[in-house]
Image (tube, rainbow, N blue to C red; front, side, top):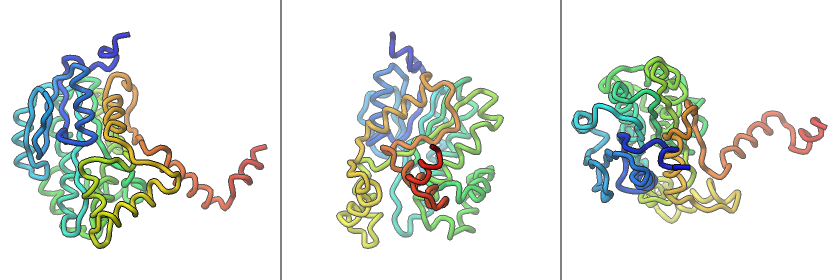
Length: 293
């Protein structure tokens, strides 16, 4: 079996953001190995042999528009992987980087994406529970311009207090809301997101500091470990543990997969959901097992 043909990236045009480091760098390396023409975008220097690298601040509409003007007229797969940690006073910046720029780029490039192409986001386990903010997210999603979105954010300061969480919940809402919209489904363009669990990347120190109420990286690291790892004596993922599945999902291998939020967290969110279901039913696992026999 020819694995390059199986993935379907050979000589195809692929656009990917965040390629300078972490999960996206691992994905970019794999895409290059699979023979794709890779157009990579990051605010930091990209040291991979991509077809073309762009340096851009993806919180800035003008810089995004400039890059878009230089991208190919035909795109076969779009991977939006850029993101930042949240710090006090940076709530709007987090919304622009972690959600709105990704929505904006998707919709600006949609008419260039080929039939049966794909759009794949990197979201986060941090977006778990997105259903709770879904009506607000849809309200924001349906705004047609960048300016309208910025005005919406100004009028909803309480919504974005959770910064990182709200942005990721909006991204996951976007996948579920838009996957069968005419602009996607008429060309059979697939729309999915991966939701990584705790992963060691170049942003780990920022996430540790932003998690701690005092900005202490060590304290934040312990807090993240308690939330994501301690309950199962777990370990953080490596960038390739997320980057490689990302490439698979955007490939021809997953040609019938769309509208999916794929949690790559060693089952952690499944146990959260299971616990919530058991709690709501006031039944133990033993009681449910007895009922089924």
